Image (tube, rainbow over all chains, first blue to last red; front, side):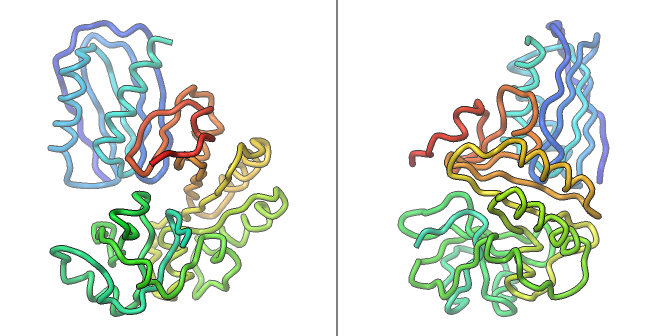
Amino acid sequence: MERFELRFSGNAPLAGRAHVGVVASGDLEVLMEPSNETVVSVRTSVDGFEKVWRATLARFFARHPVAARIEINDSGATPGVVSLRLAQALERTKA
Amino acid sequence: MGVRPHDLLRLRTPAALEAVDAPDWVARSLAAAPWVVVRRAGFVRGRIAVGVRGNSRAERFAAVVAEAAVAERLSPEDLRDRPPPRAHPAFAALAQLGPVLDAAGLPGGPAGAAGYELATGRPALTAASDLDLVLRFDGVPDMAALAAVSAAAARAPLRVDLVVETPAGAVALDELLGDSPQVLLRTPQGPRLASHAELWVTATC
């Protein structure tokens, strides 16, 4: 188990908050809410992948430069699944 | 042969595994128990896509085998009522949940480490293991029955990872029962977001 916090530059305001995903092997939960700075707290069951997390999240914020506070509770999801959940969470903040 | 993801296959010989650059532990694992698990990719150029399990979470290796190399196939359903080879909370949970599945008329059984251990007799569960339980449906299941299974799983002595297999792929039970209009669907082509209606449309390859 590992925890770390990553910061990104984002300034597009978020319309609301969202909670997507499940606690299940190979999956993750994402909580996304408006904030004045972009901070991602990652809690993951798999150690040693901070670099991969940073790259996956950087790709997301390059496409969607939102100002958001994001909490991630990961149970060994692949970067592909992480990207899908982030996109799903962002979509749900607009609902 | 109608193999499906999670099925365990016993190879006639470990040499039947077709792999490039397999690490040393792969041969050791197959020598101890010549069993592989069918991956979601299904068939790759006429070969069955399989995974080899090693001693740790990091030891997982993808390969393929020819259908003719398979001596025996055990599905999660086949493994459900097997006597456990030893005491472990996963087997206790399985014994608790079996009657719940029966009462609800739901087809399913163990996968992952518990399934592997029931099929091979070789220890795979650790103190940190969950119980992976697969429920398979050809059509839309009774959601109330699934909710009862989810509630029973929450009372189990360890975490139970419940996966629902649909004609289109696999979805986590808790997400299927949740209120999100889109769910994560794992398909032979990879994961994607899907509507609930899409889950029950047969996958096209």
